[in-house]
Length: 218
Image (cartoon, rainbow, N blue to C red):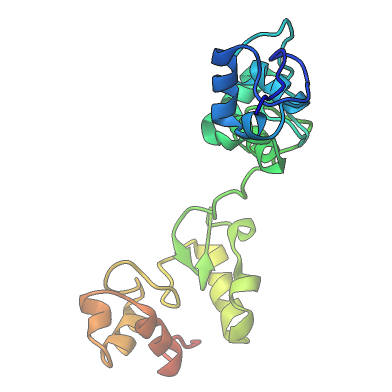
């Protein structure tokens, strides 16, 4: 049986091509070219797979680094390298929306997107008034939010916080160590559960504050 063949750089009706080395190189990656027909895809693969040059350059589709597109990589080599260090998929397979997100969030490109900074940390300072006292001034207290569930008792405590700036750890919050910084509240709770004053002021201790009515208005 005779098989028609032709130039490796041309689309012809046969299988394989006239250069055995190029033929082997292409067909190792795409057996269709040697089993069925050497079509335009096979001729393109001569260049794409580095099997020969055929006098043409390989054009790899690419696009804007700030837009998803059908190619891989993007037009700015620095941005491309920065993004692909985080996710090689963007240079090996496709530059999708995830690649654009990486470009922005990792500082590879701004893409006209304003990155919203994280919220500021909670006010620093001693804790009291059922919450943070912050800088120990009225503007730093969160009493309205923290004390909404405690009726008339809480505003009095908050007023005290404002005027005296004497804030201690809140007995209504879990503390990393024993006790909560309020001797009267500690005595009330720890008389029922000594663990709270000996080891740690945990969720059970916090629950006992309200269960035993240890935090009372005076």
